[in-house]
Amino acid sequence: MRIGFICTGNSARSQMAEGYAKHFAKLYGKDVEVYSAGSSPAKEVHPLAIRVMQEEGIDISSQHPKPIEAIPYDKLDIVITLCGDAKETCPYVPSARMDHWGLPDPAKAEGSEEERLEFFRKVRNEIKARVEELIRSL
Image: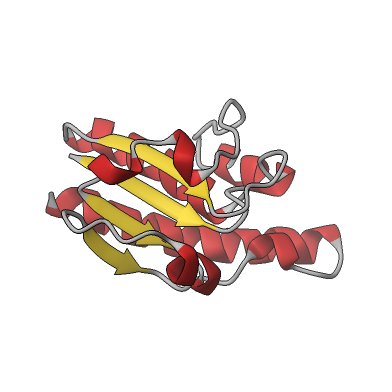
């Protein structure tokens, strides 16, 4: 089973989803290959995404943003877009189940560092719940 999480920058939402999917696949003994990519990848994984995932004991600091062409996109079994832009620009894979989880972009959060962290945590927790449900259902 191959799962791809796609968003625009591949710097926060899809990186967190990739981290959780790998974690839950191992936890539940699922044979899953997990990828993430962006339609317009950023230069680095957002530092606050790394920080809020570290709070969960999951290290995504070695992950990096990738373009869709850098993953085996045409061989994915499940493609999950995490933002409207990715949903619109994401190539269709006839053999894959295509899902859309429209989640707000925490990288665009404004305010103090604590307010931005709280927004990252809110999005992280939503991703965690959805990814765990997905992996458990496989």
